[in-house]
Length: 316
Image (cartoon, rainbow, N blue to C red; front, top):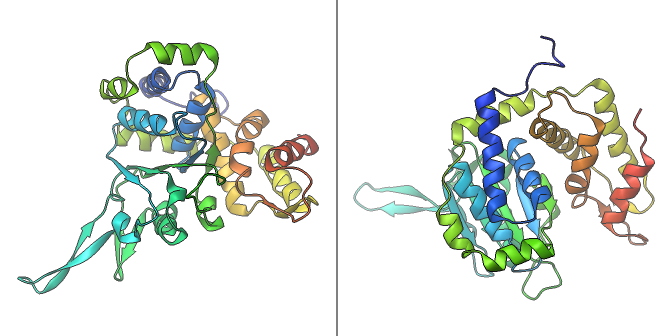
């Protein structure tokens, strides 16, 4: 079989992935597109930022993912008095041994829920940078590796709500995708109101995947074919963002790598061993929106700018 017709996944792994997606959709009702994006981010090896009003299911989605993926899980509630050491851990002097011993914090897990991340000060938010970028943390000159796969799901409230701090640009850039959930549609909300408490539903979930399967899925994702023409299309989108008059800071090469990885994961979820331009277009708003720096005199918001970039960049 040639590269274009080789199945992207073994049948058993494909079925387990499909079952995992279905299970999360039984908890987060009426949000199939957003659940799909969460799995795109996971398979592409990125980190996910969910921005929306309180009470629309951000934390529920994170809990459902944790229960379905079979990963070690920790939740940190970010508050204004949270310190970096509360997340990373701290070295404690042990008198008997006469040495400092590192006691790891909740960061040492596989799926970290950073709940309401923008309620902590920027210094604390930045404590996640090395972990998200390198899969490790350095404390007192000693580097500690995190167990793979390491996946951060962060929630944040809109910046116009009281008690929030904007995430530093360097922190935003470490999130592969940013998305919102929004209110459920009428049918989904009705089903939710008439169903069991979401906490009881989550407690009844069983893992559909585990660390080894997720690493295998990530390896398969990296092997999805991206043709030279598709890479050229990605480059054209990056260039368009840098040349737009309303954009002060365009997309970086790191953003391009994130876009390509997310497009590969989107193709894998669709059952294809190769990317098509529609994969890039499907994930572009969620990869690009939070990375664009608007000019002082920008006439449109980020959502419209992203749409303009897609419309103005032809597929060749």
